Length: 454
Image (tube, rainbow, N blue to C red; front, side, top):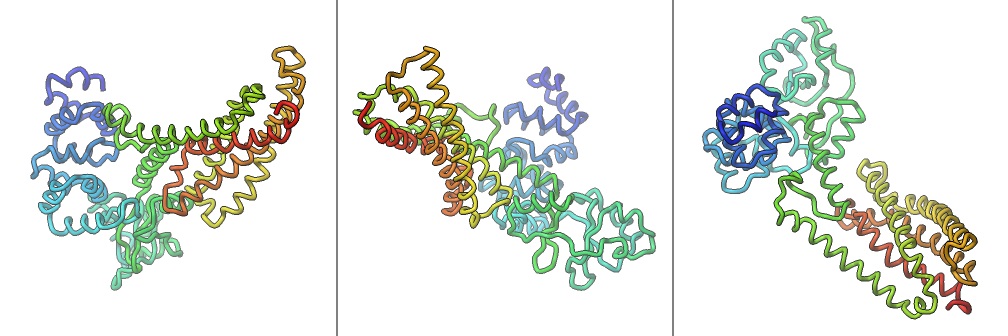
């Protein structure tokens, strides 16, 4: 796409010729690097069929704004020509009154289909489905079905999955793949080449994660969305991959302690980036103030045993790290449905001994480090250094155990009250464990060092 960048500001028509010949994925990537105004100007010069291919790509940034910038008549034709599920995605993100104006200008059948899809909750199977699929009655032959596929293949999302319905009730009976179909005899009924089993289906309100799990589990190219036995549409594997990538990106942003970005990183304005990051950062900073409060509460102890301050970073980081590990594992397991809300006690029983063992490992390392530094002369921890080492080792056991347990339980608590478990970000867990870790550390010190340093 080097040609693109060299003529971008000089000749939109010349660029449009380049865009018409390159692979559509490369075209989308190039357009995403340009401003909305430049991209809109370029798209206005691209041949209609090519523009449809470009807008059909979910990777195209700002598609709703680019559609809005076009004349209403052309925008309506583009929406009518692209795949139904993609058109629904664009309309869902579009602001009023542009959305209503575009929908009202569409043909009644398409308008009804789009309104039906838009009526389902975002992220549900029905909101991702396309109504452009191959469906034939069970009394058709293999030859007739193949002829039908040849006629409609350009208007279908996929022809690799064929759905067989009852000729009278239109209830979904079977599904078959194109490979089985082309190996059958032309005069055979299509039911003879279809696997003799009930198709894997999902309900309209099933969430995208369930759809992804079914597609992965049964190695499907598409899964039908069924209500009352009748097929409403299909969710294809490419659509679910795009959706899961978007959701995973949002989870990664939240887990990093910030709001999810709704635009690519390089497209975000300076103020928008500050808004996305500033709120969370301020909230975490305020919560970290509790750490200062905890240290203030033990100010007298710190004055008498200043050596304890040397290990505060070690103590805080160990608890935060163990909590972040547990949180990451549980969030992932919840997302993959390996565990459910009812499994919290099993997770707790698993994390408790895990935390004790991991804490003991770190405790031994901490004790050995203090002893080695003392004997090698790197640092003098004083005459009571064995008690200091015991304090650090014991505190690490308690802090790592608490970090593992609290980190694993936090996603369950958030999901129970209706929040996204990904909101249990690593910084949030670290803050929680930092405060409690200091309390545990100084409490252990009061017990072990009483009568000596304290």
